[in-house]
Image (tube, rainbow, N blue to C red):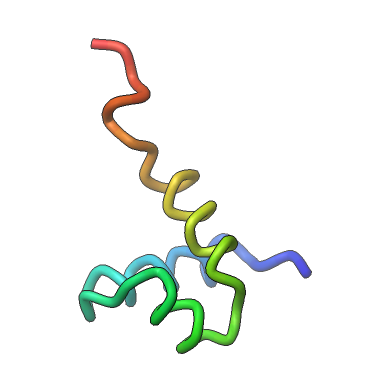
Length: 52
């Protein structure tokens, strides 16, 4: 299943605002934790992967 970018942002926003773990967020939205993890990396790439 493909989720909209708006839904993905809502998931990440909720996770950050409520201080939830990836697993807790996935359970709340009834989606896989791998999806949440992937979206975090897509929307907020780690600073260590960018060159300075």
